[in-house]
Amino acid sequence: MDLDFDPTGVLASLGEAELEHYRALLADLGRAAGAFRFEVAPNPCVGAAVLSDGVEIGRGFHRQWGGPHAELQAFEAAAASGVPRERWDTLLVTLEPCCSQGKTPPCTEAILRTSIRRVVVGALDPDPRHRGRGLEELRERGLEILFLRGASALERYSPHFVEWTRPDRLRRSVPWVIAKWAQTRTGQLSPPLGSKDGRWISSPAAREDVHRLRARVDAILVGVGTVVADDPRLSVRGVLDVPKPPLRVILDSSLRTPPSARLFQPCQPGEFAGPVHIVARAGFDAQYYRPLVEAGAIVHALHPGDQGHTSLRETLGLLWTEGVRRVLLEGGPRLLASAFEAEYIDQLRIYTASINGGVGPSMGRFLVAERLLQIERSEVGDDARLDAFLRK
Ligand code: AOF
Ligand code: ZN
Image (tube, rainbow, N blue to C red):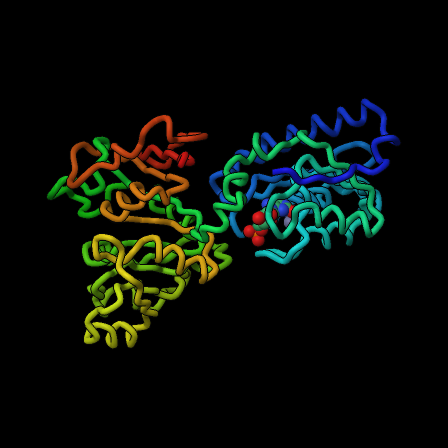
């Protein structure tokens, strides 16, 4: 990216020590913001801090997809510090503040409502809505703007966002895809036949964890095989903060989804679920259509892909036009495999349970070590959790 922003005369008024202090803070904020990479992607990892008389009084981060931006979180922390608002003078942000209405109002407006006079940023925002406009807007309103190029470079702290905002990626108009599955120790996606917990591989804690992830995506995508086999709700349960329940999208070439599926039942108290979209192959048998629409489904007819199935490419394109930018692909194994093969997967969330054996194919052949980036391993209940980005 070759955006430019003239640092004006601000640099001249600052001493080397102050500049070094800013650079160090921006690098520190950038590193700390990275902890939230899997929660915010494809959004950038962003950190911000409010200073009063050179002293940091509050910092904040963009922590979740759909959640408040770093600047707002920093303002909240600064407010909690007890330092009166009129004494806030400087804002450091690892990324140029946004100036457009997205899932939240523009940060530039929030900044202009404070007493902050100086904004120091370490990277410009390659998002076509911003690209220096955020800084221009603040400068036009009389704020002192300092762009310390490289202090929190996106290439270092948010390489996924650099990829996401590349013109060729944006032109493809396919959402960010997170593939999630639970597997046994040997990598199978279904437990051994006759296991006591039936269809469950992962522990209750991991299942709760999945609900937190579902609450932070725009859509959940599964193949009809999963609907027929498991009769899932694909809803969000046990999560208090659900900004927008995710669409439930079924890839179902020939409309095999049963109209009696649990998908179509109303939500229980505390349960959140988006509309059900069924993506079928054009020319499906009309007799299956009406009962599904009566059950509440929105049915789309798409041109078939190479093998006669509903095309994943077209489905993702359709979701993009529905405003979906972050999708959770929950299976089954065939859909996951074709998404891997066509290189649509951007991010992984894998739960491995302490169960031996299992049924069905393993995804192991796709998990080539060199393709997994920024891996993070953690434990959720009895299960091991792996998060990673996937190199295309
Ligand atoms: C900021 N501060 O902390 C972040 C920014 O998905 P939305 O609607 O929340 O907005 C995402 C866009 O906002 C993203 O593409 C990027 O341009 C900017 N991200 N901006 O001022 C933040 N995360
Ligand atoms: Zn913002």
